[in-house]
Image 1 (cartoon, rainbow, N blue to C red):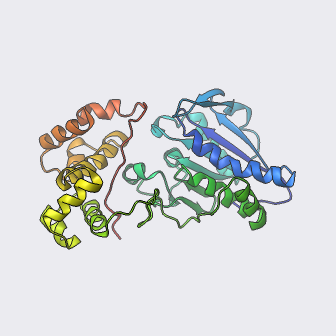
Image 2 (cartoon, rainbow, N blue to C red):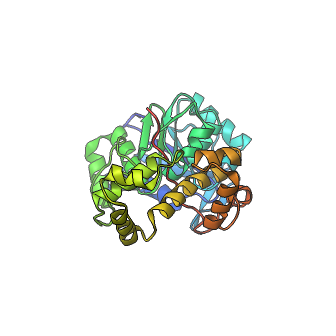
Image 3 (cartoon, rainbow, N blue to C red):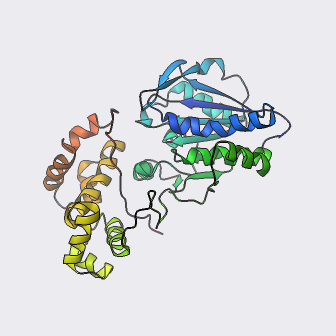
Length: 339
């Protein structure tokens, strides 16, 4: 990723329909700030789509883009693919060829949110480490076993760089500023955009013990939930979870009623179904295998429970769930990757 600091660093950001506009703009803002603060064009960028023109984002806003044909012959330093919904639909022949040509030319290839799916589908992440938004990690592992996927905010693996999106995109951009122009400019850019701490590539997407709003959740409840999340494929009886958390069944019920607003059994069922939904809508894994991977011995029970939670059976959700619409995504809980 290191560039010659004496010349401009050129970035192309390829956006796919329904991309996350907040993550994409957050990524670019450190470069804007760096240019502004020193009054020099350290970084230049262009937003690109295959056809050019207006590209809508997942929140209804959108941006104007230049067409891929107008920039494929231009040299570049960094190419970032930004996608969110249904990334498997957005790798076209032209985009794949352009990405591979830039890779052969020595450009650094990167991704925001689910953009790593597109790079992997193009054969450009084989043997590399990468990350995607935590909701999609299970699906990525299933589809691309030759890429090591980790639940970090971002990954810098030589000339392949990936970021989970969201607020981490700002850290990702600042890390690039630091790599090209050093800590002084990166610090100044971070202060200018009110980013008070640069999280490094080792930072986790969901760090333990951190509650974004400062709410204090009892340790026993955290232990119970963690135990559930570690046993999604082989569900553990609630009494055994109580033993792990060193708490009585009645006390556990009270804690869940107070903090989760569900019974322990219902919460456990729901997080298994949340994981299942990711596998249903993001992979081609047979429904029967999804049921087993989510701790359901009976496919009939699984389908009934799935419809109860999401409003439609898994076979139908596999088709309709790939079509983005507001508030459709559900958080996906998964068991830790075995060591």
